Image (tube, protein in one colour):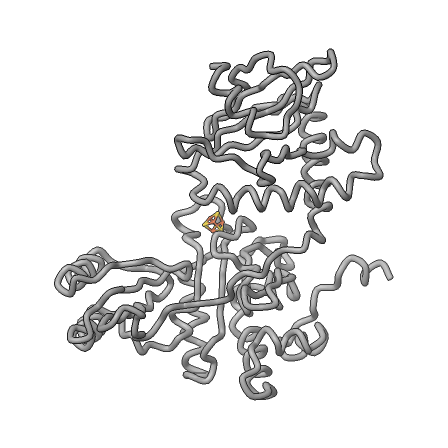
Length: 392
Ligand code: SF4
């Protein structure tokens, strides 16, 4: 074991005499080793890890992210007692990169071993849970101002588009609510086989037929319409995402796909194609499988009590989130909106945007330039006050 690890360790900027190495820890994704060196008569330990590139498909990009995070935390912790124990310290490879690729193509990284630190596989006391939560909270706090690259922006791939490969097209298949029946799946598979195309799935719970020869495009579009997926459906149908939720997920406290269906039908009936580009994301709980914090209108399932104390389904309404530039995490602007009052609130907000928007102004931009009180008047609801405002 020691000989191959010695060779890997020699690729990193670790000095001193190699004393030995052994597998370390109980992780089951990467291969982890603890290597010991004699540095000026003192034994110093390092962690060497072979990155599992079946799990982490882009090890170099992963390591660049880790380097950004660890350097940011090191700067934050510099003023604290014993700063090197507050976060991981990456050891650079001798070629200056933050990883090393060995002759077999394996990717490796190296960290300083934090002596007397312990990793718990399970928490068995309240104080351990407290310390874990405190450490995680501090980690999040330190990262809150980490300058991050912007995401690429929103791409829905819907419609019919020419590919860069001559004579080939891709056809976006809007799948309302991400629900597809077995017969529809078979029909799509059949279409793909006949046309020599590929089927791909999108983050918005839609599908794409890629590599469709030009001569087959018209037939493909006709068949998609026949099986219930017209490619010219209102874009709202492709952009609305609801999590699996009730009745399939135990975490859900509200309807999800069926509630979203109601919202989409209401908006289609009232606004037709004028709300192209509006994105709705709805989740049945805070786990956010449908990413309610990056929709134009995000909904998180919750409950509300009536005057008799009986619980009813309700939603927190999140606004000002987006994956488009500048990307932003939405905040709950309206809390515990009863399910039966949700249509009116959403309709009011969308009507306010449609009636007042500047040319091409997105719903998110409209919300950005509106105050919570202005949005509250459109929604017919009192906006939630931030804690700071409540105590002011
Ligand atoms: S967001 Fe919550 S309710 Fe919806 S699928 Fe995820 S865990 Fe289940």
